[in-house]
Length: 68
Image (cartoon, rainbow, N blue to C red; front, side, top):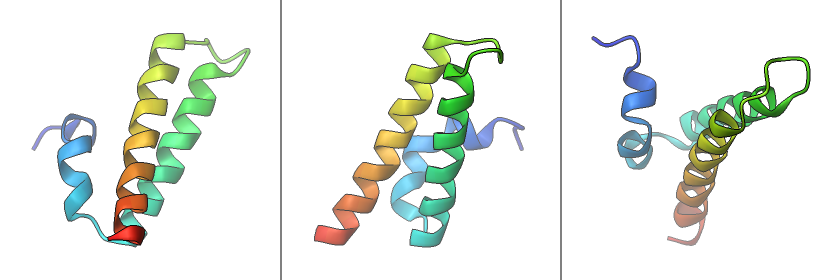
């Protein structure tokens, strides 16, 4: 199995995850986005944008489940 499976299948895996796992992924993505944008930690705007997109995808999936 690929070491990067979590990242490779991030968007495809979201519909099949439990609400608890989605919350874990949301926390993970939020942390990574914050770290990518933080001063003194080698800021990477491209990486921060990517993680914010992943965070938004998790939020969208959680919102879809709440209204669905």
